[in-house]
Image (tube, rainbow, N blue to C red):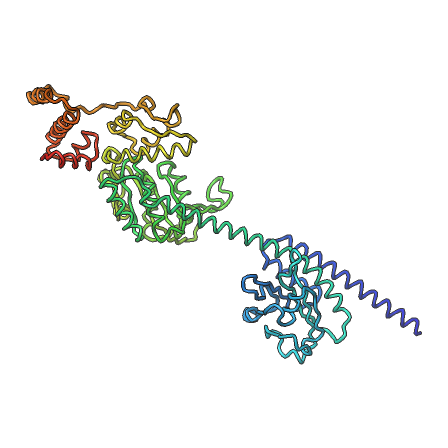
Length: 535
């Protein structure tokens, strides 16, 4: 009978051991699957602790990690603890059981936390620990032979329960698996920090690039534009940029955005003239899955993408009347629905628009809604054509020369006087954009270090001739007077005076127009007028 009882006991222990091993294998398999199912540390560890609770009867699992900056241990993830309890779970290295495990890098078992003076029970999540048989198991988590934290669980046991050693062995295996999840999370955080730093750096570069001082131009018209940019950047008012094609409207729009309090938000742009009406609507408002043939997934529109940023609508004068109605609602209410959708979406967007059309004429002709015009034309900024700011041409030429050299790997250093004369005499219907393209083309084709006129096939260039009329008695008199001059400086001064007088007579004393006729800046002309004592 004794042998039979002994055999039955051995069989029961074997069966219990087998069940234990099966449970361990199932738990390890589920944990392995969980680690590979997500890159998020909190998600992975919560799943691991839930598996330990369900499969192995372990309670209050916690992941405690070391902050290398403060040297403090704090609970990062927990199962069965509320937020307040997690917040209380902070230790110094060497403090309490968790602190000692991290300091020594060795696992520890507390068979009964109520009888262990080193157990701090700082989370206060177990109630009266003196009244319960709670065991505490804690194992270190190591990366590259360094202890970076600890994994701990509670276990309700009877005193002397032999399964605690098996639990500790299992927990040690799991801690090595959890350490890989921690490694992946740290790599993710480093990559995210790197991307954040890169994002900040790029935004700072954009802010510098599109700062008003980086827009080339020193004439009075451009000075007025700089002042306007500075004023409107500090507001949320809708801005309309007016000017011919190629005058730099998009550059000004960038400057307004990156000097406003929305600089950290997105800058989204769209050309209204480049898309047909149906496509423009879907691009602006987005669409839901199945809204039309080919809409396999939902897509955000430009309005949503520009949330808490700026939306730049270029060529706004080219949108259809039906589209104008829909746009008016977004401007007024700051809300819309996606195509095929019913949910109203609210956005916080600052609008900047641009057009090369005369919208007042368009409104009178009925091609542009008057209410939309007034809604958009809150703060208009007019950009001058290049022929209205010819004094800036030398600055622009040098700027585009440096840029073209950098982009194309060239080293062209100089611009011949005859080339500069071409630039000053040409009407530039394509404005600044045409000038930039002409410079880049010349730099690419230039075989030497100097740009010459043959590199600029500019059509219709006509040199200005102040004496393009029939010679008058004054002309004959000027020639007679100049014949007595023998020194070159005297002759130059004499000729300059005569040319300046003639230019002022032709322009009725308008110094700006006279400077344009003479192909000099207004400042230089004013200096010569004062120096020669001319009126």
